[in-house]
Amino acid sequence: MATERTLPNLWHATAPAAPETRPLGRDLTTDVAIIGGGFTGLSAALHLAEKGVKATVIEAKMIGFGGSGRNVGLVNAGMWVKPDDLIATLGADAGNRLLGELGDGPAMVYALVEKHGIACEAVRNGTLHMAVGAEGLKDISDREAQWKKRGAPVEVLSAERAATLSGAKGFSGALLDRRAGTIQPLAYARGLARAALAAGAEIYTDTPLRGAERQGETWVLKAGDNTVKAKQVILATNAYGGMFAEAPWQQHTQELTILPYFQFATNPLPEKVANRILPERQGTWDTGLVMTSFRMDQQNRLIFGSIGRLDAIAEGTHRAFAARSVRKLFPYIGDFRFEYWWDGRIGMTTNNLPAMHTLAPNVFSVSGYNGRGIAPGTVFGKALANHVTGQTSAIPLAETPVTPDSWRTVKSAFYHAGAQAKHLVDHRF
Image 1 (cartoon, rainbow, N blue to C red):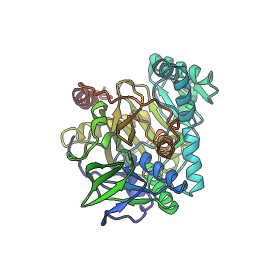
Image 2: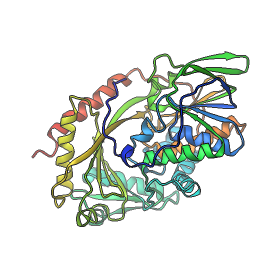
Image 3: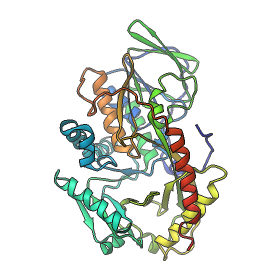
Image 4: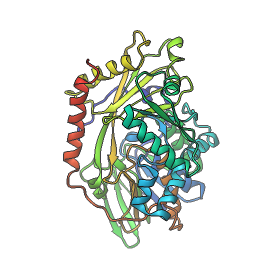
């Protein structure tokens, strides 16, 4: 796995402070041990604690260290896969159930935000899937038809209406999904953590999982320098599950292709400019082969993202591409500078759908959100909490064996190199 670089991340700069946590400093016994302090793990901890179940989160770094603190912040409904394709893969019963629960995923997120008073810049005015060219317009039109027959409030907008709602030039239309919205993702993760602690969960940070031993019906986990005993374990590490070589239960990472994604955030823009860019504050992404996204935050910063990793070699290429793209999309923007930039990892599966596994007796995971971490992570966290407390049909996915993708390393390298090559030339002419 690529070495992490410390980069200036906007979400870390603007999120409310995390609740106070510390490394595990003693041996303890719990009902359910949760490995990973992101959306899935924190949702599981909160929902378990609300049931009166003793839940303990073990996080190797800090709350929201992985994808939850690097996310674009789009609270999307459903998965990236079109509804009909999802049903063709999973079958009608399982597919419709998953579509229903994930379609309602944003509602769950915003309900938790309201219930627990989470300050996370929550806006629920929908999202815009921007169409690139005639092919992109056909793609979003297919999505509209498939979601509408399931009763979803989605609408294809004309090029003119898309330009008005986005403030951007050059798109052939957009799909407005009114179920969805945006949040400050790290603020949401920290809010979930605070709510989980208030409900009675325990969270230990800077405590990597280093080993696991089965003793009868109990798992004895080596967590930092101490042990945690638990009969049930939820593994909620997703694309960041391979950070420590000695950690157990990494087999799910062998089916994830890592898609790197970066973001650049501008300085706060003048009011007259900021009011023209996404005036209703939807978040966007496009249908381009090398996807891009843009959104605004509450400080009037424009946040632009695309595929690629900000390593020492590629950062300059991606920075220049981001600047050219912003000027082309918003020719009226005037002078701006990038104040923040960061990247993260998206865990992609071969069928672009999440997978549920039993990795060992009473060790459960859901991973492979394919760029849809916020709502699915929240939904599956609650489902995992229900599953380990006896509701064996709670997870809207059939359990499957881990199926390693032997090409994942090659594909990850291709995404990184291919995006860098495309960004080198895009919008230069």
